[in-house]
Amino acid sequence: MSTRQARTGKAVLPGPQDTGTPPDEPVARVRRARALPGREPRRGAPVRGWPGNAGAIAARFLTLGLIVAVALWAAAPLVSAQNWTGTAIVAAVTVAGLYVYLTPRRLPAKYLFPVTLLILALQVFPVVHTMSLALTNIGDGHLGTKQEAITAIETSSVRREPGSAEYRLTVAERDGEPVFLLAEGARAYVGTAAGLRPLEGATFGPGGRITAAEGYTVLTVAQASARGAEVTGLSVPVEGGAIRSQGLSRAYRGTAQLSYDAACDCVTGPDPAAASGSGSGDGDGDGEAVPQKVWQADEEQGRFVAVDGTALPQGWKVDVGPANLTAALTDPQVNAHFLGVLGWNVVYALSVVALTAALGIAVALVLHHPRMRAVRAYRTLIVLPYAMPAFAMLLVWRDMFNTDFGLVNRMSGLEVDWLGEPLTARLSVLLVQLWLGFPYMFLIATGALQTIPSEYLEAAQVDGATAWHRFRKVTFPLLMLALAPLLVSSFAFNFNNFNGVFLITAGGPFPADNPAVGATDLLITYTFRLAFGQQGAQYGLASAMSVYVYLIVAVISIISFRRTRVFKEVDR
Image (cartoon, rainbow, N blue to C red; front, top):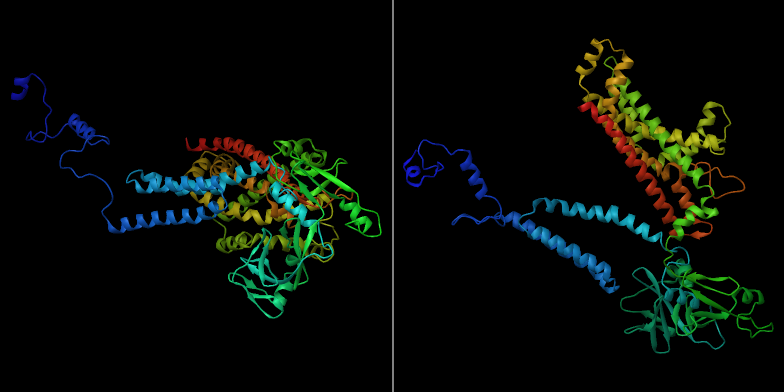
């Protein structure tokens, strides 16, 4: 017992001052505890903070400056458009970024922050936005607000009245959009789709037309003629009507035949169908006066509807709740062929995965055999389809399957309508995907085979296992350990393989009595046709169908990933 122990009656932990006695484990624990974060630093000890390297400090300030610059660039248009939700999101992201990169600690967050932003922007936001669109009636005629729909209704019904005001017109452009530079005597105006406003600093030429204006690019006659459709379609809304072009040198102020009445929340005016039938839109001709009609605003449909059920083509975007989601399941025009398309979609994805994996593994096993020669040359030739642009190859295969001059029929001496019959069309798309997809499986299988220890196969051979048993019990499970996740991802890709079907068959062949759904249609091509078919774009319905496709793929992928865990037993 030491002198201090005898004096105090307590055990004294040896320390560095105890000559010949190295610090024991309790002392080390005490010292480590003193060094834990949150404890007061010892007097005179250096405090950890910003790195002293000038280059690191400069890089940090450069990063912070870049964050602030991007934030200002993104916030400026949002503030001008009074999009306060988007502005708040930009501000929150900027504050989070400054906090992460200004704090000396939290090193993992400095790497995870940009990755998290990319995931939110490229993965989460598109899914959430698609789901939000599925709850609206957005589509052709329902793209804007109610006020924009009213403006479109009034400007589209503009008719020229006798004695209406005329302007000398100069067609110009600003930010790529055509505008009207209008001269009325010595006064100058600029007209856009947003309205009419005075123009300062205009230069007048011979005839009183405007030849130059600051901030605008005056188009030549040839340039304006090339954009004739845009010039003719431009209507400058004014009180009681709109200004429209008459050729490329003159414009007139017309009167709107249809007008909105805020008191009744309705649109009144002559019936367009009756007006077109009578040949007189104002009733001043020799024919009978066109009867007036009233279209009442329907906030549930987002359009103006008359008593007889007819509606004006211009509407506005409204929330319809789960109407699109239920329509995908209950509307006969939508769900009549849903189950049939879904069944073929699953068969198509499973068949492509199974065929490409089987052929890829088989070719990899053949080239992996020790007696195989010219392996490098064969591997180069096999990988060629995978190196080719898939878009171009799909178009080439479509021409190869042509009945009259296709290479397949000419070389085989057949006269098969490959893309005109349901069975042969399905075999064609499967064959093309097999040719395009098996090199990828071959590459993965080749790499996995080279990682399998030869001792496993030698031990199985010594135990009397045949070649088939060695493959089934040793090689295949080890291959699946690497291939199983890729098979799941390949299934998800082929389940939504729009190009693989649309560029070859466009979803056809189609029955004579039903051009809406074809024999090779996948859910994604079926959705495309519903959304952009002859009835016009229906983005809300297409988004609802996309939600179902997403849920189906997600459920199948989750189940498949859970099933692939059984291959991990080979490592135990």
